[in-house]
Image (cartoon, rainbow, N blue to C red; front, side, top):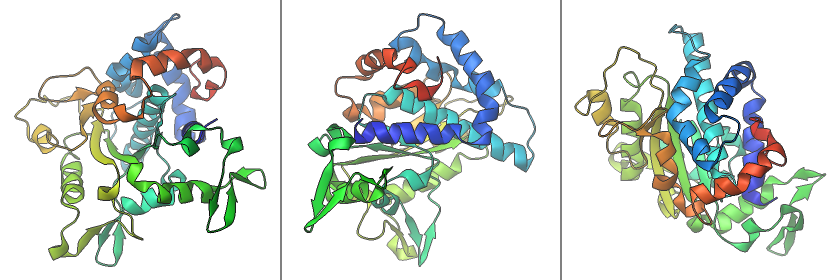
Length: 309
């Protein structure tokens, strides 16, 4: 197992450890299996992106109480993160919802500082494309590195040692690609949030207002690439989204694009299935179709943690 595949496994298993996904998954799994059919192929997996909204809504209500909104947001983030990891299996790209799992240099790089206060970056999902370098492509059981004469082992007390990935990420930071995805169930209420955060990231902060990006020497603009994307359900059934809608215009020019869990509608939103070739193509040894095709036989074995078979 390589470093990217290790992080994919840990990230996906952490999704299933939450009560929200445990409650939703039996219904979602049934919906996913109905969409895929028995003899599904790589195109069927990719096309799940056109149905994510319907899958999500199969367990949702129409209430807008704070508790339901919070649970719905967590569920949508989890479903999107699961789908991205499924479609990037076999690549060097990994989606992480739990920020504490991300290497510390990446956590530092996407931090937004307002004066002396480190602000919430609204990073619902962090997507990491690891460098195409030997240390990331070999089995982690054979990996160890030397730092200032000290040997850093991959495992400490039989547990993965985070020091090794923090060291590697710091050493090779310029070769990493980072993506931030903000996931919101409601488009109308939240479109201005990704618009403003993308402005801050693209401008590398606003020093006249004492707003800066990054800390401890790490900044997203030093990485190989950085994208900021918005992914919505959307949950507002009465909204009629058009190219001239205010909510649409607010996210039209995001660096990472604007997506939803439905089929692409030109000039409104792209299906989330388009995010792989738009933002994460560099992580695939071949292309998204080939890598998914190669991973299909593993879904009942080493990739059984995706829990669709």
